[in-house]
Length: 390
Image 1 (cartoon, rainbow, N blue to C red):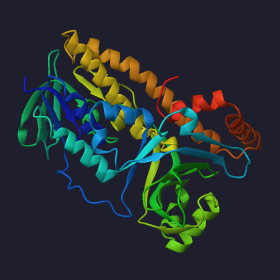
Image 2 (image 1 turned 135 degrees about the vertical axis):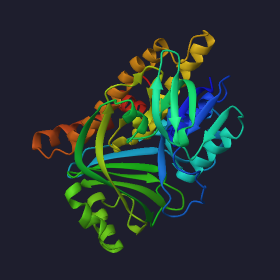
Image 3 (image 1 turned 180 degrees about the vertical axis):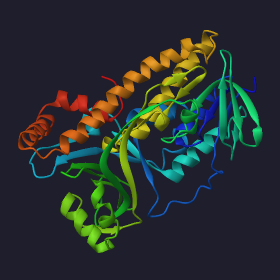
Image 4 (image 1 turned 90 degrees about the vertical axis):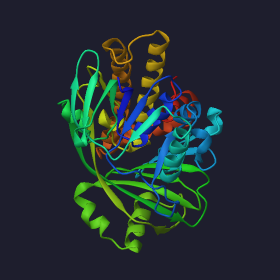
């Protein structure tokens, strides 16, 4: 056997899995199609990722957080509101007795942290640039064919290669897709005053506006709009864009002073019909792609990593075959429930807050007011946002 585990996809979720498994007595390969990325210094337009508090604890457990702790921006408060209604609520880290409800990590810092962690281990091999062109699974192994007809054998292949997963397609695993007819406009926004480590989620009729705290009086913007508006919004001048954003969001962050480069991403819900096949399992966006509302997409991928790592540790302790149907069925059962839970949560938020019907607006308003007034209900909602049980 060439490797115990082959991770197909060397993005953030794939490398997180490699970091989590590297401490175990396993030979691991990471197959990545794109050439190695050079980590650039952060600039105004640098992309960022939201990390739940629970996933920050997991990254600390696997040794990644020590390289990220100094640069990650803590979220001390989450402010939730519904445009056109008075209902709002605030979730506070101090009330939940945690140092932060979550963190914002810049892409270069997150990439560097994963790279630094992997450099400690000699049992992880990076095959890059390389792509899987075929897979043949037997009861005892998975045989993967790479470009130039190179073949590698493994006890377990993990598809971590994203929404358009090549491995998932080679295995002919169907997916369920739902088009939200919404597009996310991603950019960084400069502020005229401090954000005080507050993350904002403001629901509008067209979709949610999220503003996430970054360094140097900046926020990361995720502005969800109807897809029919994308061409117009993307063509606006900086001044016009900031004016429309200000009108949609309001002045809770003062005046917006600057917007960086804008990117647009059509939004959909994608869910694989199968999480496992003989000797193969799916994690991250290869298994599920969510609406960015509440920032659960990347976090759910890390939950997959944590669950699979735990099950592999248990299999090794019991001297079980880590790629067996017995082990993979545990992952399927556990994560199917977790995926269903978070898909229902995010999809429900999208459809509830995008509906302009008066009765639903009253219900939303009442719900946000209840969250603000009832500490137990607020704690339950906060724990969901933090990726914690209970």
